[in-house]
Length: 343
Image (tube, rainbow, N blue to C red; front, top):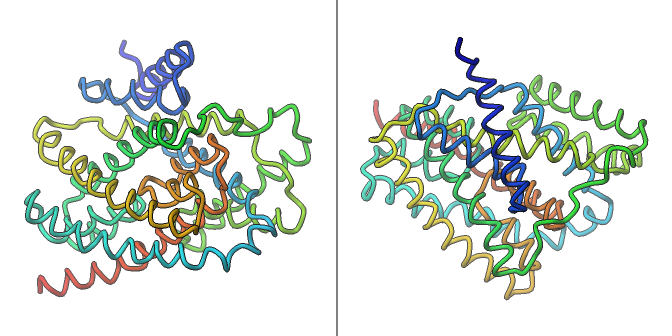
């Protein structure tokens, strides 16, 4: 009797984490599951994630970021005004370069090209792209590829070019955190997630707990970051999910869509590198924070990397929030434009 796909997926992911841990490779709980699930998916193994667990893992990161929103950070907001404005201009530049790239070079229609180019959330870009008549499968694979490649190369850049370590403590052990604080975190995670969904907040699993966590931190109710064990579980689930996303991919999709997405990541990387360098030269941010803030990876994945290298979580995440807001705010406008254009 064959094993259920979800169990097979978990076993493969756990094997990857175990191998990476045994070999002392970087970020074993993220890269191990990501790599073994990717290999299994490309080999034709039927993998299946668990959405509720994946979403729950993101609430941990939301609470972690919320705990980093301190009064000191709020006092620094005026100093971030320039870099936050640069982020908005950066998104506009991505659209100007990305749409012609996907239409003229990759041969996609304009709708699919636009929503493929925009570095927003996977679910949001698929939803708006579908409403505008885009290719849903292409959008899904391109955005997964964008996040996968960025997450794969970012640690190498951080260690080789910025000289940071990937072995930093992501949090205190669960035994070192008072039970009352753990209870507060659980309440923030669940209430933020479900409350965010209730009001229609985009990225509710992260942003809801982030908002409540920030409020609790500023009020002095929350004074700890989620325990290291919870962060490791979040890494495991996120890595597994990235690999599982390639399940069922065909050779044609691999050649046309995935390679197109990977090629565009090279373009994005060059743009991000140029902007990061400009921000650092102008003295607006430290190199590591600037790199993580302007890297067009997934919000959850960049949060994990910021935690591992000990970067300023608040600075990094605030810039990614601005990126998401600009992209998502512009998506309905673009969708209506493309729909009207077809009529």
